[in-house]
Length: 169
Ligand code: ADP
Ligand code: MG
Image (cartoon, rainbow, N blue to C red; front, side, top):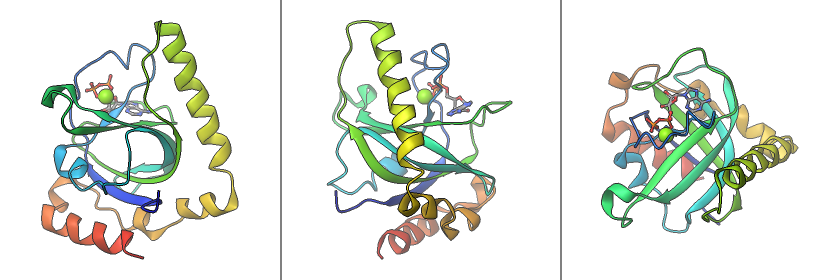
């Protein structure tokens, strides 16, 4: 995928409450404004990369890009599981993400255990791959240090412009 690495950021919104928190794998959902800016060659599936909240620490993450049931599977959704234990939820905060690599396509599982095993394998693969020097250096990209610390600082036009610049080189 020639669009990788792909940088984006947006406010964390409420998802469908599909119980990911009960599986102990919460996923922070991006709004349509972010999903609509995904390049066409970013297929649905599971990705690994880096993520930070506001302009805080940068953590490893896995992201699911899938078909959004709310729009009868005609639009994509983006949900990030940050590989870090947070003390509190962070709805409304700005999540900055760089998609670094692709792990696998989406698929359905016969059981909850099989799904959880698959996700835990994704997390292990993400942890391992992100240690490669060429991926580690993206953690230190100034995309993360220049992140706005609040949602009000993220005007839609500014976000679009900076995304274009960040991904244009
Ligand atoms: P929703 O359906 O609203 O997305 P989830 O069960 O997927 O609910 O939980 C996601 C929420 O959990 C996030 O929006 C965030 O506020 C919180 N959260 C806490 N820890 C994490 C984490 N490590 N990664 C992602 N989200 C987390
Ligand atoms: Mg979620």
